[in-house]
Length: 436
Image (cartoon, rainbow, N blue to C red; front, side, top):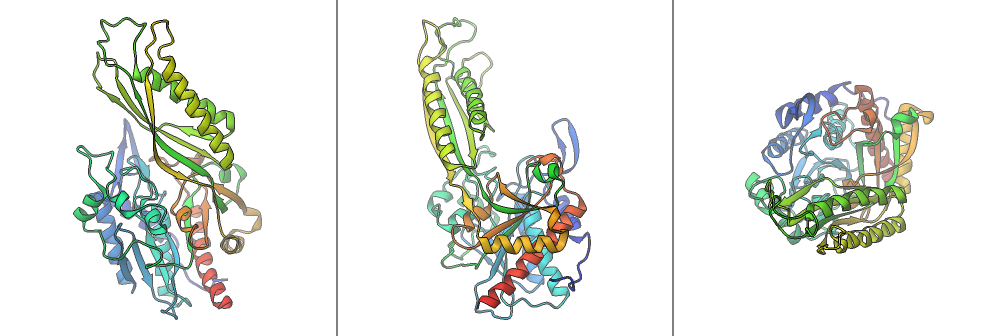
């Protein structure tokens, strides 16, 4: 469809690596050295540097840059009809504390490469294109994933999000405080009503091994599975480890450990996912039995009813573990508290957007090399899909690894994905014109 547009092979990948080197490159991971690690936490200094770079790039291409109250960045590239709502394409520039260079940045920088390409070719789309950098998609520094896009969609409130505290700083910092500190609390209202887009396309590494296992080059994403995040707090009694008999202890860490194991077993039982990513122990002393333990519980399933069943069994099981204590005749019951963090029902993407991606993928890699797929992790497209037509492009990543410095996609996979995304965005622009 857009084969006449000349692209610069390898430039996108070079941009990914150049910006990583400048803003957040991580060369050591534990005892291991890495060439592709990235630590660019949302609203931190590295994120500010990357945002400043991105702002200069899009303005140099002739974009109007709008920054909203949550720091979401909308770069509006001009089209023939500037009175129309822009065609949206975006992702995020923040990473995990021990992340890689593809998860997130690929989506924003591939969008940037679209704008560079059409400008160099003198191609003017029918409608403006909004290239978006969504704030704190990862939920790593601030435990509110899809932070910026969820306020934009209206599923969370700005006032609540502003109060969220970081989990990577001592003392913790708030979202509002960090937005103000780095100068990215914009004046544009964070709302799809006042700052609309007509659709949303996003490219991402798969973060799972299924494309690689099937020998396919492009995943046409149909939707996103449901998930639930919560914090579990187990409370017992602090006692001296050297003088307290093993029987009759109210060991919060022992109970929490049993809960983590049972959560894993329940996830397997239902064919879903149940994981714990962090665990905080109080008082965190060598010879004191922990009296309080807080841990994360991240549960996923494709089917909403099975996720509900998983969560019900998890709560019933955790309550029983707490009530049983150490299981001896002198057992002391513990308490367990469940704190909701984030929840999202399954997402089904828009048929027109899915077909636009499919047609673009067929043109780039051929029908035999594509695969319909469901996203297992959350993405900003989950929030946009509740407001506007949305779909995603997946490319394979080695061994399905992500959220680690070892995440990797080949130069060809990156190039193929970029071409599919560009064809999808420009193809939808033509479709909008035809429908109008």
